[in-house]
Image (tube, rainbow over all chains, first blue to last red; front, side):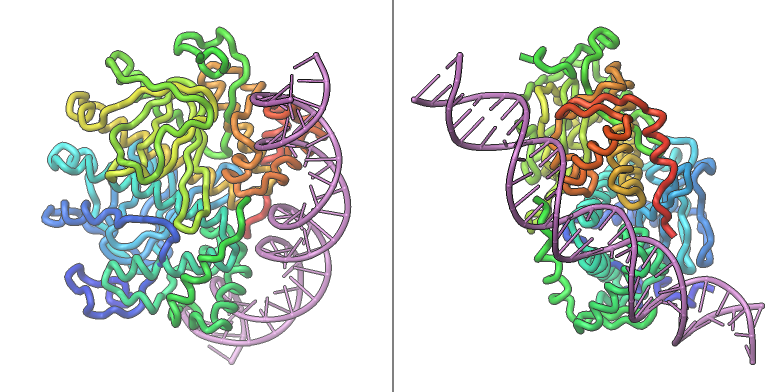
Length: 246
Length: 246
DNA sequence: CGCCAAGTTGAGACCTTTCAAACGCTGTGG
DNA sequence: CCACAGCGTTTGAAAGGTCTCAACTTGGCG
């Protein structure tokens, strides 16, 4: 059931089958986030839960019971306004925590949707907080770095052109995948062009055009959702010459 | 020294002199954030610090010592990338915490600049964490709500037109000021048009044009940095008809 | 085999940006 | 006390980047 996805690999299997996976380098300092949590709870007998692609782990408004630590797979989280506008707030990989943003609320503040066959571990918040001395601290760290990550994307969206945003996304995904033991040069996008556009504040056609243009420049190879980074250095160079702000 | 600014009023002075102040309603649920922290530490003998407009409370990269609780005034926080791009991540009022985002780092991740005569109270993080049982929890709450607030703005920037973003900002500021006891109808913007544009991912001229147009519609009165909301309901109505996303 | 979702590409329209100029405050110095 | 410099704001006109709408292609699945 799980082996259909290349991103579902066991923790120690790093380097074993670095097929496709996906994430890119943000043009901003962004330290590794929840690694601390993962090691902290790995010995605990936690509830597992598996999801298929397109399955919701939880929805906004639903009563919050636990946090979830992604063990394998690929998620998106999205918020939506009363008038129906939707915004994808991030794509989440192994090691990321889901549900953190509603820590102080009775119900979840966002949707969490699996974009691939995935597996999560359920973290009973109250219980862990009381039994693990470091838990609270680690959680604060993860929250803080999530804020910095969001700020990085706000910066990117506010100051980069469409093509640069796409490049920033690819490099960020590449970096994140690299950190998980996957190949940083071959990305398998698990989201649609529309999802990507939503996240980057672009229309899906604009995303497509940006990818096509990057391919025409010889910087990447695009084959539907599989993307190969042919020239990471060249890609990074595109971020240097940014749109003037003043 | 402090009385020059209408936003500098003593805590219980709510309703006393609701002159100008400033903040608006985000088109997203956004609970009051750090009120808990304020009441938690109000009895403590904390170090105070006063700043003039344009003065930095701290800068990114500077060694982090404490958190700061805004007691009066108006701040902006901004991140910047290596290549010089800058992004204002938020405007902060009384009750907001500064420095939270770098909780897990040795140095600050953003700049904090006073935009008006301001006063902050210094919170020694380690000390409070060890002595106040609730401190850690409250901090996590503030962090989580900061994330939700950021998401709300990401949503706004990604899905609203220029004019709608300006309206969203005005309403959000109005709401925040109202919560602090200032008049929600008379806003004194403490930031430049360029700052506002930076925050909303717009050029300063676009901000100006949006304000002028809203005034032409009879929804607001603009006099330099003083803005009067003539028709809050009408303003809110502009947010209803949003740009289609699909 | 055919339907359907997702992706690609084109052409034109529109909104925002860019560049430029003028205006208004504010504070400084003569 | 007034002149002038400097910053911030406003407004105009043109350019340009995305968006919108539409058609077509591709691959997956019943």
